[in-house]
Image (cartoon, rainbow, N blue to C red):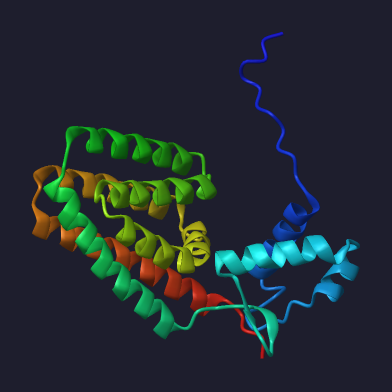
Length: 228
């Protein structure tokens, strides 16, 4: 028997399972924004100990879906429109700076690397695999940040993206198949502009790209139920 095409089975832990359950509950509205996540209650409901629940909640905190405060504890978090606007406006400034540096350093191998990522993104879109589309989207931007060769900027822009990453994924998952294809096409368009080394045009296109992502997130957040 040829085992070459077989992939190892991922080992899932209890915290993985709890994280997935909480993700689904938040996404489906069973745990709307504002809901307190009490470790003991969740552990009893899922028939597990508090340890995997604690680990799962911490993962959600790192993803931006949950926030912890001294008085309220952990609760499902939804960024306000104002916060999304602030994050997006700062991303525009940072990404335009990235483009300026990338254009000054543009090499043919950059196009090759980006085309490869977009090809993976397109395959995922054709298969309806939104998670993979989202991951390749992140790889595309991370590659650009790396081409800019500025370690402090890389740290800051990565942090900005991380704060809205989960909401960006959820918003992308709501796109229709045609909209998902158009989203992939936008990345090919960016590469075509990068090749011209026209900094002004490239900065204008990356600004449009980020503001489009902001609008998707705002639309998604407006549709989420909020716990009174």
